[in-house]
Length: 352
Image 1 (spheres, one colour):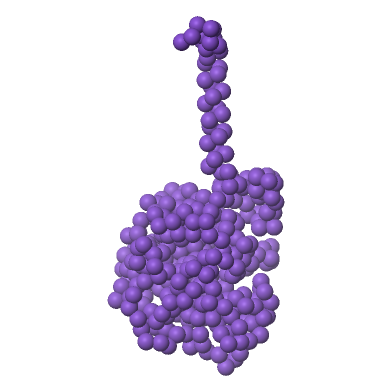
Image 2 (image 1 turned 90 degrees about the vertical axis):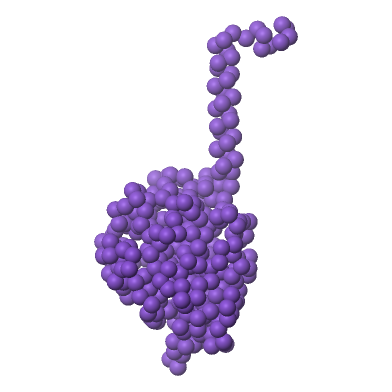
């Protein structure tokens, strides 16, 4: 060391102070890098983006603040195949290839998410396709409830179950099940793991494939008239697989992707019924599929959670339960002459 360098003349306390400052700066830089895309924090009754001061109060009701203090708002890479990396909602609508099915849930072709969800006079219920709804519970049996982001193209800002999405063609792990895959449906579970990471940042190791429980399927449709009015160009038409999963303790750490989820919280059966049916919360929006599921068996499954999660549960069924949406989800072109076969593919079954 040069005897005239500054370091050579420093005392030990000075060196220690400089070392602590250097470590502190490194921590700050690492934090900024990790959350550089923005983040959210709790400020009284408000949820705010802490970069650039973007206020998203409108996404959150006063009584339902996030259960975590900081939520990174980067677009996440999903599992190992990078699903959704750098893609906004429009690109995902155009690139996701859904599994079109007939009324018996037999795969009959593929179609982009955008086309399958397009509602109009020519396709008043879009095109029937496969979906899944994950119900994730913590060790106390509380359900992880989520609110869809306001940037979602279909049914934005509605409260719903933990994760709702679609199995896709072309994924690294095959997501297209065949009828003889009942009751395990490995493809649907692969899709659920992919989307739990993409939407909520829940890593695959926290939701092992073998611990998902398939219960039943629901066939429903709904026009997104609440968002776009009676002439809405969008809607849902799905055969929806119900998957239950229970985690130990408080449940997995949630790191929500703000492109997908604006809010989340764990609720008990009693708390959910209060949110859904009391005058106090009548301004909350709910997804039509979640309402239909809960009122056609969902509450029963939850109230008997131990049985629902048991391998070979009495609730596990190959049946497909059909329901129409609430009246407010009928568009002007949804006519009384339309039936459950409207929008359902009738082409020859295809293998994948």
